[in-house]
Amino acid sequence: MNDRRIDDDIREYYEAKELSPAALERLKQTIRTASPIRPPRRHVWPAAAAVAAALLMLVWLASQRVPATEDQLAAAVAQEAALGHNEKQELEFRVDDCAELQHRMKSLDFTPVEPQMMRHRNMRIVGARYSTLAGQMAAQIVYVDAQGVPCTLFQARPGDRLTRLSEGEHEVDGVHVKVWREKGLLMVLARPMA
Image 1: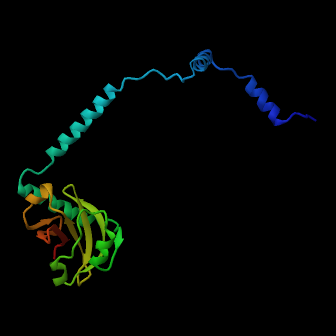
Image 2 (image 1 turned 135 degrees about the vertical axis):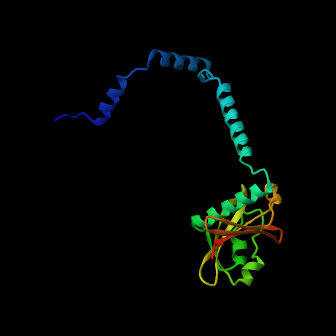
């Protein structure tokens, strides 16, 4: 029987290993100077310039996609609202009333409100999620009408480009989109066409 232990085998293995001459020289130099040797610095300017150029290109491309006229902006917002309604994404907040929604959606830069139209049409709130509208933070709120048909209401603070958005109605992809302002917020309601 072999009386050797595994510790002896491991010790013997590592004793047979050697540092490369370059590594050994670096280690000796580190010991002599008492400070670690840093590898040579790579030039970061070409990479930084490439990143800056890419960011400038993205900003330019984004600026080219901004609708130039009020009609183009209204069409783009209506398209975005119709798409948001048709996608039927998962709701982050399930609520029974707007007061509960106001309490739970704390990351908005405004307080969601219940529009008069929803009360007059006897619509019931189901829930909401964070969203964007024309690049601005918005609340995407799902209501159900008296017949059980879901409707999607987007609310946003009308800052930047949305201040130019005119009120009106649009039909996009089988969705009726109504745009109006109420209580200082921009309201965009998307619902199936009758």
